[in-house]
Structure formats: C-alpha cells, structure tokens
Length: 246
Image 1: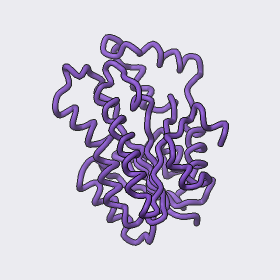
Image 2: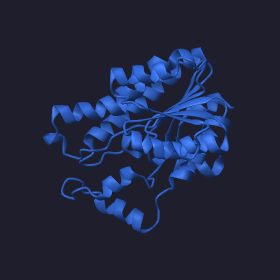
Image 3: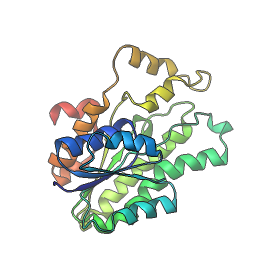
Image 4: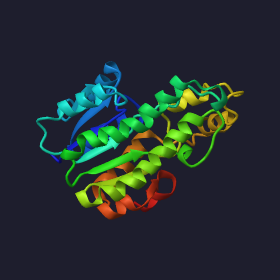
C-alpha cells in the first residue's frame, strides 16, 4: 500500500474521481468523506479493498471529530484533500440571509481550516490540497457567498503554506476549471435573472468544453504524487494551463 489519503466531498464529481484514481491506479488507501451514505457506497463500489467510506459533515465540530476518530489507528496521513464545497443557494448578496451565508462559510472555509487543525498531528511530511475555483478570483452576480468563501479558501492556502512549512507539511491549491460534475448541473438550472452568466455555462456544456472529472483526478494525483513539495506549494495550479506541462 502506498500511504493513506482523506478526501472530502467524495460522494460525486471530482472527489469520487480522485478517490478512485488514487485507490485503483496508485493502490493508496482512501477514506472517502461525504454527507450522503448512498453516494459514498457508489464511490466505494469501484474498489472495496482500498476505499473506506465515512458519512460526516465537515462543517460541524462533531463531523470533524468523527473523521479524526476514524483515523485513530492510522499512523500517518499522506494526503488531505479539501474538495467538499457548496454553491447553492444562488442569490444576490442583497437578499442573502445570515443562515445562507453561514452555511457557505462553514462548509467552504471553516471545514477545511478546522479539519486541517484536527488532522495535523497525522500529517507529518504529508500534503494538503485545496480544490479552488475561478470564483476565488473573479466575481459572478448571484455567486457572492461562493466567490467570497473560495477567496477565503485561497488565502487559507497562502497562509497555511507558510505556517506549516516548518512542520514539513506542503500545502497546495488547484483550480480544476469547469468540470462536468453535479455542481455544474446545478449551475445550468439556475435562474438567469439571478445568475446573468448562465448562458456561458450552458454553452460550455453544449460545446463539449467541460473537463471530465477523471482527467482532473489524474492531474490532481500527479500533483500530489510527483511534484516536489516546494513546487507543489509555490503557486495555485490551474488545470487549463498546467496540465500539459505536468
């Protein structure tokens, strides 16, 4: 076995694809985290030897403690991948409720930060990877909570890579581009009066311009497994421009 990984948001999309990439192709044991047990079982069906599943909510203290407890007999953790995120509800910031705002922040920002804290003792010499987004750097009407939470996640990466360097933990970030996942299905069902960029995302799908989750997973695995630690952390990687130079 080639080490142990924890991947959040592993019930579908990029998380599911990366779980299967690391387990099937690289013979790595993976703890796949998600909130829906049925979806996690679908992920695990590809490889029950190397994939373990755990239904847990990374946005809650109890969920993070549950993940930590599941790793109590694991000596070390090689990779921690923060993939879980929420886009909905898509509403203008002027109409967003406090509860909606806090849900975005608790899943997209607090989950990665405090799960990293919780698992840090097991990450000696390991790597942390944040799944970022173009929304961290570009504003979209209707995506205010998502954009700001992803921008905050980007700053977490920038600060943590400096703070954890002395501990031998490499922290990286990657923009996977627009990927054919259930989240993109949600995007294309958005009300155009709330999300004026809707047509752009519909056309990407119609023109077959979405990245496949399996291709993204192969690129992420390459970053985790093959890129030297300093290079891994030095910039935010971009699937659109960096994958050909991998």
